[in-house]
Image (cartoon, rainbow, N blue to C red; front, side):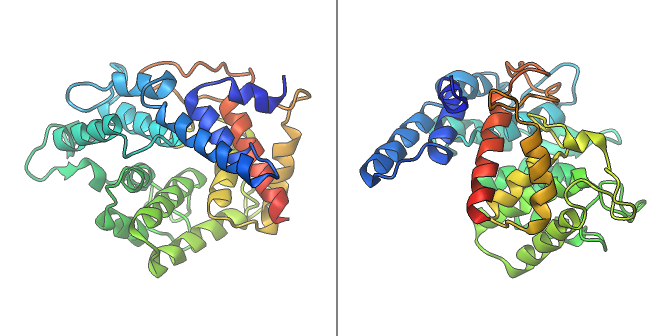
Length: 319
């Protein structure tokens, strides 16, 4: 079985992105048929497989809850998982889940730690975020994707950009940016622009954040050229707030910026391809999800294979 066939024999969320991003034909009529088929496949996500399971596991208060995790963590990462499925936000079941969340919960500092609570005076609505930019980058991405873009949150994140171009949840204690926080914020700003329209101010902030990553070849220390963190070369899904080169490369694909400084990370990604054409799951930050994702660390990963193949196809076409 080819990697493409393997992806097409999978969950609707993977099938529809595979059809859209990887299946093609030189005949325009077939292309149009593929597009229609992909759209039909997307409509299945809320009703079948992982997408349906996520929606079904939402709690009456709008959250997704693991008893061993803070409510905010489980809810945030589960919503981010829905976004990674590229589920249709206009689907009635999806919109109902988003409405249930935003009307039932807000961010509340109680006591001394941010979590999600029923609405209280002074509590931030969910899509307005809380304090840490790594969390707020994810919240901003969700707001943009699900039709609730927050200009207030976008401006807050821009105001927190550091001198070196990135972001760090430990600022102002730390004046140096974090790969982890920077990719979270970049994804959020991009999704906000997609929803709210182009903004020169946000585009400039994104460009500075992209330079922070590009100057470091996506995974090296600027000072010494050494690998900044070995985990950056390990491909994870879902990533939670964690950074790795595949997540960064997929971001640069989304903004269509095929910079020559991506080449080393592209080379690493190619080297991780297995003899059968697939990529493995190196890490899974799924501890806050309401159920297992169905992939085993060390085994072949459809999610990593899908993302790696579309990154390589995009990069090679641009090159």
